[in-house]
Length: 409
Image (cartoon, rainbow, N blue to C red):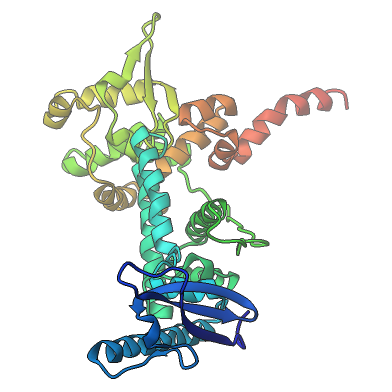
């Protein structure tokens, strides 16, 4: 029962269960809409000093006066609990009244607490190597964003997970896009994290309904920038001997253009990741930091020369790495200078080298299955996003058919 749930309290003694001192224990009977529950209030009274009609102890001694005051306090506390349940639109039953009085009501599961519980699993996955540090960081950042959102909109850092509604999700999405300025795909990723947490809560029966029912996430396919072969050649031809920092960044970028390594992978690439096969060919065999998938890449002449160029560099010797890589922030900053010197009008970042490798490989008729293995992709669909066909490649692929049928015309 809810708003109009009328309840009564009746105090009585149990004559059938006298205590050793002859006093009788006092009970309270809680009644709500025909439902009954009895509870010992932890007090007792002598049989001759109990007035059952008035539900009080008779007599004027200090003991009886204190007992009657305690009974009144019990009554007042039950009234407060009843009013609270009505205000919060919660069920009123003898059991809920009793449990709130005794303080045995189970506290509701809170959204951010459950999210952090899920994040403990993500951390274990990271420690096993199933996910990368960047993925774990995004899961943890999502909780921070939820706390910021709830502080802004609800003046609280957390809410019961049962209160997560479709409207809450829509408002959080708006917060991510407008306040945090997250791009569409990043917003979708955070909402999927939240959906995963709600499914976890449903599996544990902490919530009964899925607020994401009917909610569809649409990722946008980003235009993947890459360098054409003439642009890559122009970058390689720039004389940077007077600017060692730019030269190192350029060489790192070019190395990635011919190997397809992501920035995090070239940063951690060790000499021990290079091996020589029975025919004397050099290969890179390295598990990707992001997915753990093994990338198997033949080492072409250009990246081999770059590797040899830095063989005696102090950082390479000390850390057994292939190239002395700068931080990603500094790399991207220096790439702007290099692009200007090479007269390349594209906004260069370290990741464009990976796009360039995929596109250049496809343009030179390397099978997409081979490209996928070299890039360390789990799904070839990911490779299809990276590997953008160039017009002249399509033309070359159709040339044989063109010549065959033109000759018959």
